[in-house]
Image (cartoon, rainbow, N blue to C red):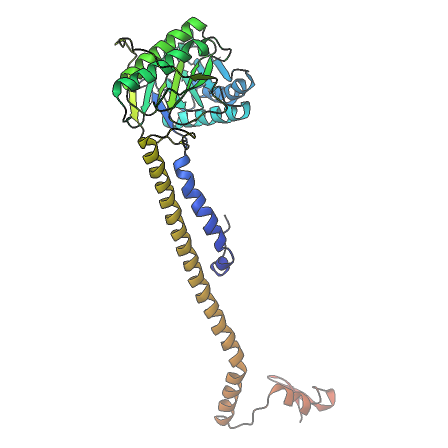
Length: 395
């Protein structure tokens, strides 16, 4: 790697002013991920299982991207090193983004779950799971299940339960009967907060199994996310996300304007889930125009305040870096000036030394031009002979 010398630093202060703030601003935009690793069933490095995973990581992303549903399953190898894998990109993604994200998911999963034969990772735009057990044959198992929630509503808890029930119950059938098992919606009921929701099943599920999976999603939502401003229920076979702002691409496919009259009793046989509190989603965007609750307003102020702090800190650090570069440059410039001045003074120093030498010597000292003139440019007519120290000339 080649570094710029310090004397050149003042020519590039804009680099610090531009690059440093960009790096700092990118920190809060990192993609959220939730992973699950098996506690046993380890594989060894350089094993056949590793080779099979490597083949999957190169073929499965392309397979998913080439599918009209951005969904793919694959089986690689033979027992006991066989690997089953499944991946799905969100319904509002495109093929190139899907391939890139699944490729990254493989890399992250091998890093997050090293040497584990069973592992899964969930991003908002895609999910990936691989295992040495044939989970592909079981379409009714939705684990591992993750619950991700945000802060509470200020509205009545019963109302928020009705909002969530209305939202998911209204979308389940529409998503289950679509080609991609995917739909989005906007719930806009009276003075209640506006909610945006996305639901999706694995496209290989039949509509009945997809609706059954969404029923489990509904139960988990009412149990874990009641009263929350936003949340996700992430499973292997289906998932759901809702927020108080539009987080998906395109317009909502469904608009809900009527609230359900009541919420049925929650089924207590929900799938065990890992719950993650999340105070601020990484891809949070400003809420839509229209109704804004106190919580939304405070959230926007908090988000803006955080961004201002990042910008101010980045600017101060950039100014400090430029100041340091300037000081280093001034010092280097001062040294060069001193050296140049010393070089200018050298002929005078040589003359002084010459005069001192002549005073301390018994002989007269001549400089070279005087010798050339006296010997007629070392001509042969002035050559007397050869001595121990070389030719001898007369003057």
